Image (cartoon, rainbow, N blue to C red; front, side, top):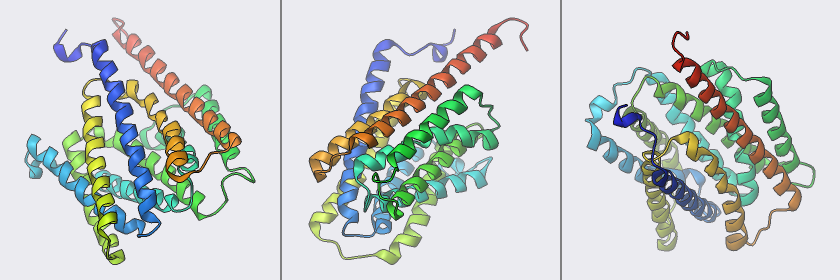
Length: 307
C-alpha cells in the first residue's frame, strides 16, 4: 500500500481536531469583532478591508506552489467565478445580519447550512438522497422554525440576511465540491481570492469612511485572524480527512453563545437553544449517514468482480 493511502495516525487526528477547535475559536472572536465594527461602519467597507488581507495571504500561498498564470487555468472558470461571487455575498449578508441579530441566535440560524447542502447537492451534483436523510433534513428545518417562532428572533431584515447567508454558503459548498473534481485546490483558491478582491472592492469603495485608530486596529485584528484561521484549518486538513473534522464545526454554536454573553451581555433563550440543538442533531445524523454510505460503497467496490 502506498504511503499516501495509509490512514492518518491517531495522534494526527487528535491534533487535527484540536486545530479545528482552535480555528473555530478564532473565527468566533472574529465574528464578535465584526459585530462591534458594523455598528459604526458599513459591512461592505469592513468586508472589503478584510478581503484585502485575505487575498494577499491566499495568493502568497498559491504562488509558493505554482505560478499564478498556471493556477488560473481552470476547466470550469464559470463555476469558479460564481463560487467567488457566492462567498462574497455570504460574507456581506452575514455582516449585515450581525448588525441586529445576537451572535448566539445568528449562529443558530446559519448552522442550518449543512442540511441545505444535502438538498442542493441533488440538482447540482446529481446526488441521491434517501428517505432517512430527507427526514433528518426535515427535522433540522423544524428546529429552525422553533428558533424563528413568534417571540423568538424578530422577523425582520436581520433574520432575512441570516437565512440568505446560510443559503448562499450552502450553494458555495456544493459548487466547491463540483469544481474540486476538475480543478486543483490552488486554482480554486486563486479564483476565490481574485474574484472576491475585485467584487468586494468595487462595492466597498463607495462606502469608504474615515476610521479611528482604535477601530482600524480591530480591522487589522480581523485580517490577522482570517489569515491565521484559514492557515490553521489547512494544516488541520492535511492531518485528517474533512469528513472526520466536519462534525466539530458545530462547536461554533456554543462558542458563539459564550461570546454573546461575555462580550455583549446577551443570553440566548432556552427555546431557541432547543431549536439550535435540534438542527445540530439533524446535521450530525446527516453526516453520519453520508459517511456510512461512503463506507458501504467503498466496500462494495473493493469486492472482486463488483461493477
